[in-house]
Image 1 (cartoon, rainbow, N blue to C red):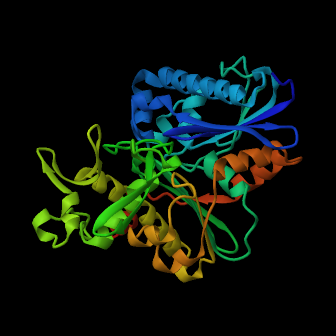
Image 2 (image 1 turned 135 degrees about the vertical axis):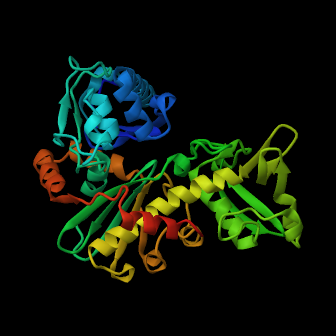
Length: 410
């Protein structure tokens, strides 16, 4: 076992906990992700905040601490180092996850104006909370409201832009930032877990055997899997790709409704199934497995992509900018690098004028935390960035509700 000094970077997501273990030269020794065990108390942050407000806050804190310990143990094992080699550790998470980890009163997030009393970065010492770490864990500052340290980390890792740019951290809690060329506007939308395939009938993490791509060939829906392994389920990008293929083939209407088999004049009708649970798209079937995307799965995805699209439209309207003015759109989060721009266009997640300039950023939050760990003036830089982000609350506003309803169709 190696005895080198290491550094820990964590991305505390609603659905997934991910981490890097780095050496003193900022090289990645191990990368790992696990499910956030808090999902036992709800798939989204609002469910967990409500559970905490009813007396389950300590349980949620313990679940998250257990998950972090498990992740750190796995990272150390993969890197073949001792956990006590970790010299410094930092993490970023959304506002709800950050508050739950610190055991804070979450009531302010549930009630208007949905803002915690303090948004500063926090040092969690081993004596404060047992995370299985020999060093304190620095938790990134929040931008305000439901815009958390994860978006701060994503923005911190990117090179400064001089012209208007959009930044999207796509996940269960979708977080969006707009740089107008002069100032920052940030917001969050409750996208739900569909982008990460949680709550999807055959949903699974992006691991070997997950269906990640879909395309049409010879009157059939063809699929690709991670690792070219036998299909075991569908990851977030796979859900989007299957829906896009369904739309392109006519299996799915622009409203999101799966058509009846008798309406399809080609062999593609083979993919449409009727059951007691309703209509679905059959994706892969053999003697042991019958993987499908249900009508409800498609509706869940529509709600998620509709929230993101509506958030974009509202930010643009607030800044009095047209989509064509956005020179770059940086996307990180649930889809990673595996989703194609054509798919984003087909499912209408972004305004068409923004599609040509999309840049996918792998592990955007982790890269921001990694950058901080090795930055000489990291604390000052983070503080300055977080203070520059101006929250623009959207939840429940007429403008957002109108944009959301308009964004549901494909």
